[in-house]
Amino acid sequence: MSDKLLSWKYAEEFVVERPDIALARQHSLELGVDPITASMGAQLAVLAAATSAKSIIEVGTGVGVSGLWLLTGAANAVLTTIDLELDYQQMARKAFADAGIAANRIRLIAGRAADVLPRMNESSYDLVFIDADPDSVIEYVEHGLRLVRRGGVVVVAHALWRGRVADPAQRDQKVAGFRLLLKEIAASEAVLSALSPVGDGLLQLTKLTD
Image 1 (cartoon, rainbow, N blue to C red):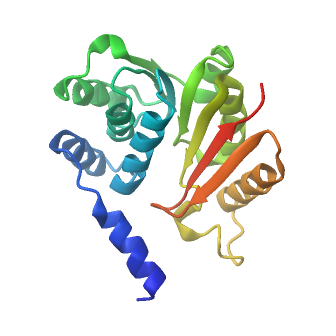
Image 2 (cartoon, helix red, strand yellow):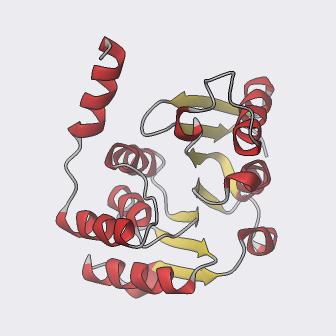
Image 3 (cartoon, rainbow, N blue to C red):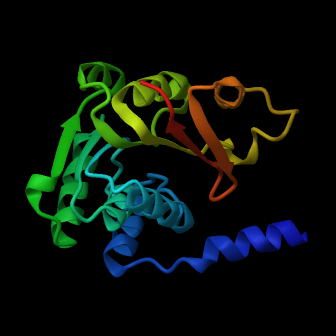
């Protein structure tokens, strides 16, 4: 194993999850829902804390793993989380309740993000986290940048898509979508961006203009 891979593995295993998050992860894996890694979750918590987030949108609830991490870093935030799967959201609701998070801090919306996001108020959120339908990632990022305030953050999970984005031999639709997103972001003067290799890639954007 190369030094870089050893360092990546060390960073991935550095984070120890709280029991409530570990339990939500277990439930997620049992259902076949791929949750973010613990290292990605820890980075989300740091970003939520650094932005003093009070209002967060999550695209892709799953069963609550990423939501629990976001609220770890934003102890007073309200989380609006969107997912097409109502059954998963009910499990997430229980995970939030079991973690002692007040019900009035969680807003669960069951539906297609493409239908829900256009109805949200622009420049009204501190952080948007995107972990859903990779075929729609560019559309979701465009909505996310519309919804966050200036200085707010949009975070995209799986930005290196299973390690395939960096491999020029890979050319499927999902890989092409992430490559196009990264190319457009790199050329944009409207955001500051950073691409972390944590998990299978975490793209972080800070909005500079309204």
